Image: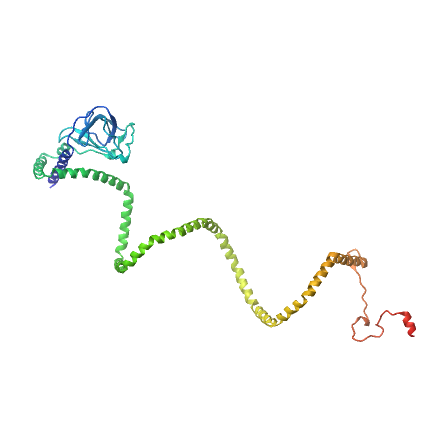
Length: 411
């Protein structure tokens, strides 16, 4: 069985090589000189100085030299004839055989002008990178891998397939032409996947844990699926409303854009305030803890003054009838108050109050005494029956000034 599979692979490679020969026929010789371009290959086996360089099947130059780069790549320096257009950045090259056992040549596509000119490489010449080059597998090398019985079977299979595909050369040629870009992109995809190997491994491990967790909750998962199905059916019944809402969404977003810009500016301005508030949080916490006992005492104080507030409310209700009369009395006293204000102002301006304070100070100094401890203000107090207040005259306690002449005339 393994021998049959190997023979099938050999036949497939042979068919692809034959189609390649049909797709790239040989062209004429080109001139010497012209532009030199470096083409990097993983392997330059089959080409040597003097090998042909072709574009679209026509010979446009030859290989000038084959050297090894520091990265162990093959640098094939080709010389393009005069009049051959320059290669661009999206140019591609490959090493193709002239026949099944003949020498190989370098086949290139110049690329598109919009991609720009080809960049120079380490050699100072425009260089086609190794990612844009291909090297086919030699059929002879593949055949040497198999034993004689396998080779005999391969020749039989090639002969039979050649007879069966004799009229399908154009189809195979188109398949080979289209397979080359696909293989290049596949190689790039595999390189990306290889670079993401650790992330893929982590994703697989997490997926396994999630699957294990979900396996123990199959009933919940079934309920979720049923609810999702019911939700989708309900949403489907409102398809027209959803479509109308989606049509109205772009104008709504356009109208909301200024408000969103203002919110963004507000957020930028509020950031320092929030940062300051965050720094003040410990102090506010300590203040709240310290304010707890004060608030409890304040509650006790409010409970204590509640009866007094009730009595004050009663007194205010009793005083309310007196407020109009008080207002009228104050209005009536307003002229007298104004005159008193003017009189006191005049006395103040005339120095009355300063003189009064000076008189009191001087009189107190004149009648006061002092000893070793300080000054004493002395006074005479008479204690007898004449010092009491009486509603009727008291004998011997009345005194007044009178005119002596009038007194004598009266006698």
